[in-house]
Image (cartoon, helix red, strand yellow):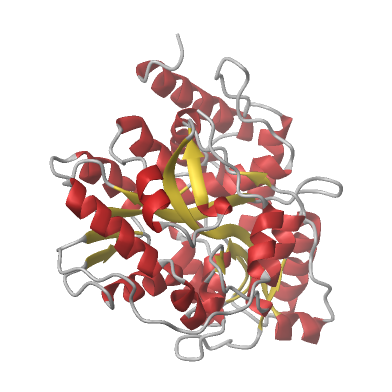
Length: 407
């Protein structure tokens, strides 16, 4: 299985394109189309635009979408027509055959889509990408200026800055991080592990995380927790965003999709005081400790063809230049008309520094789950880093054998 790669150069080329004038709906429908995706601001922008063209559209925005989608799309009929996915959540739907190829729809209606929006698997278009996403450093410019601190470029510098910020007592906690037990915690490990140059699998599909890079990743994560809210194991993206907005933390490696919320005066007490910088390197000379993602849409297999076609055309309304014109700063869009602003600087500089793309595969999905279920014991001091990694490896091997991926 080979998934297409969104080339950074192509993305930036699109980003430099001129903004388009707002237009009305090119397609409207009275069908009761249903949509399920994550709940961050970019999806609000996309689905609000879709609603303008479909009065009976039912939108469900839920950060737990990744748990709901596989079962919901496998139903007969599918409980949703349109799914919002990322490279890490597409695989379960592909493996179960619950989303349909989009080639015919793209040929008939997708003339305005860019080639780097077309996500292909085994030669077939299976998803339409709308944006690039990555975690990068956000920091309080006023705190750093008051203390005369340089913006950290490595995690050693992050820890040094955190110590000085804590000593000055300007915020409640110097650092925030998305370390909620489960998926978020695993993603933080994946970022750090990739930053230390760790490989996830050997040629046979066995995991390689019981390695020096694995230990370094865990040790760095634990060092960061010394400067975080003690309840870090419930700290997901929304939690960290709100910590920032309420002035409780001074820096975090957070998703680019949360950048606009920092500058929203209606909900942020620190609007205008949050800087966007590249993701720190795991160590001097290493890779950025983050991964590159895309987000986009898929169309369910188990629905009538008429509804599937309408859902695709409606989704294109949500991914239109007029949506971008109204919501330019909500994401690093891959859609014509996007103009990068200051809030996108951290994400773009991170992408240009060469982080790895999140490896979307069945094996990675199982390993991600195993990581999220096992490394908290090290972070809370209940066992060694080596034991947590060994537990993770054992859990992955059991799951991979049960799935028939390993003997």
